[in-house]
Length: 217
Image (cartoon, rainbow, N blue to C red; front, side):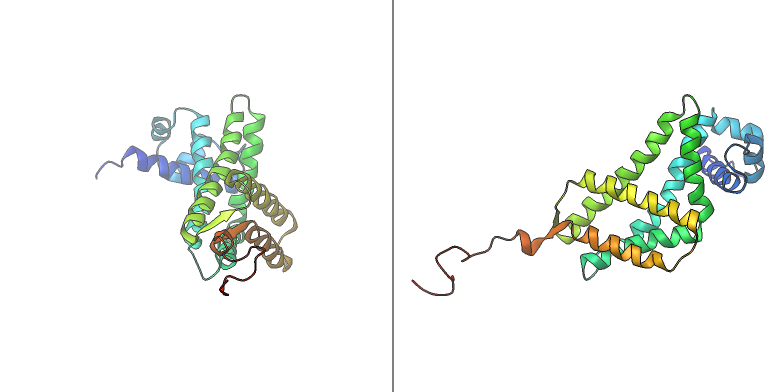
C-alpha cells in the first residue's frame, strides 16, 4: 500500500477533528479520539501536529474554508448586483442551515482560543481570516462587475464579517424561522446600496448651466 502524503494525513486528521469537536465539544475532544475518528494511529497524529495549537489553527482555517468555498462558487456575476450579492448570502445561509453544528463549533473555537493562554492569536487570526476573505470577494466582484464602493473595501469586509457572525449566532440560538429570508433580503439591499455602478461613475455631458448638449449654439 502506498504511503499517504503528510499533507493528506494532516487534512484527514483536521477533518476528523472537526467532526469530533462538532459532536463532543472542543474541551472533550482528545488527540486519541481524533486519531480514532480519522482511522489513524496516535503516532501519526503527533507526526503531523506537534502541538494542540497547531491542530486548532488547522481546524479554524479549514472550517472557515468550508463556508467560504460555497460562497465563492455562488458569487458569479448575474444580471444585477443585487442578484449576485443575494446569491452569495443564500449560499452561505444554506451552509449554516445544513451544518449548524459546524458553525456552532466556530464560536466554541473562538472562546476556547481566547481562554487558553498563548492561543489568543488564533482567535484574532480566525476573525482576520473572515475579513480578508470578504475583502478578496468584494474586490473581485467590483472588478468583474465594474462598480466602485462607496466605502473602503476593508470597512465593508469587516461589516460583512460582523453582520454574518451575529446573524449566524442568532440563528443557532433561535432556530429556524421564516423571517430569515426577509432579513437576508434587507441586508442584500443595504449592501447593494453601498456601491456606485459604471453609469454613476461615467461623466455626464451637457449637464452644465448652459442647457442641453443636444442643441446647437
